[in-house]
Image (cartoon, rainbow, N blue to C red; front, side, top):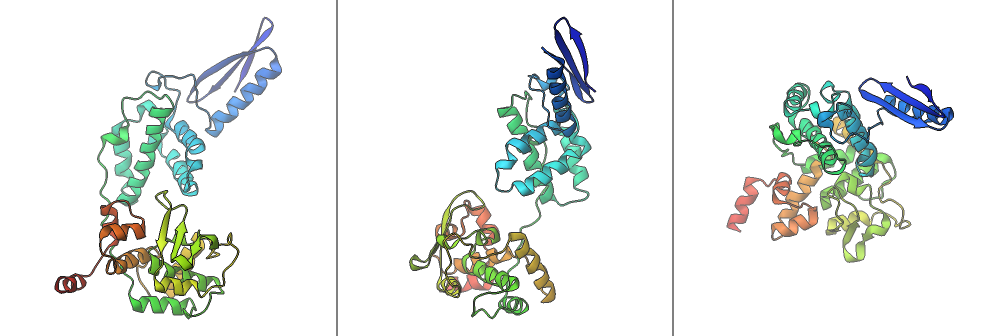
Length: 340
């Protein structure tokens, strides 16, 4: 609770809350003092306050790591394309006892203990994603916000192993069963949401585009006469042109061109996923993700392109290791190339 004391012609305000060093400030009037105290108290209780007068948290216990999480969310996360996914992760991390400590007390051992506890309920890939986010928060605090720590504690501990990369391919039979369940004949323009999902999946199989890329395409991005689609923003942040095969062009020609600003596929990404999951269940197809279309397409494209640089230009992968996770040829197909 704030308190106020008159000192001569001025008023001295004090704000005291658990976990924050008492904050004093002097004002000319009581009204100004109360307005400031109310604002500061509200920021502290909502988790939005960081005491900017603290220069070295190593000698002051006022800055909690949750304060830094809040600042990161407000100033960094909100500017990211994936903010709607990262903000809930930050809010979850704030609930973890390990991160409700003063930032100077979050040592590598604290992070390691949290990692081991977290691995009891989720997989290594999830923990690694969380650790990447925590590490980014520490880096920003140290490099940009004047938080003086000897090192980033996340860098000092062992990372859990990620599970083996998926090898799931999409068979022709599964493609036909999905088209049937989604009620699309592959010869006419989609009319229903289910048919649009089928169209998006087959376009993904023909181009190796991601779900998010497909649902973000606008008609002004499509150049059928030049056989490519321009993606202004992709997952890795770079623009790229996706070449269109004859199959991909035939799919697009099923549709009636719209205004350049209109979306090619008029569905939200989450709706595409939801309908796809239900369709797989109805078609009795096990362990198939929409994103597996990217692996299938990459593998098929590798049979037609002469080198890995051409393949990466189509798929947008920046490094060979990442590309290898999606390129899953069958041994019998590789054997045919040896004799070809």
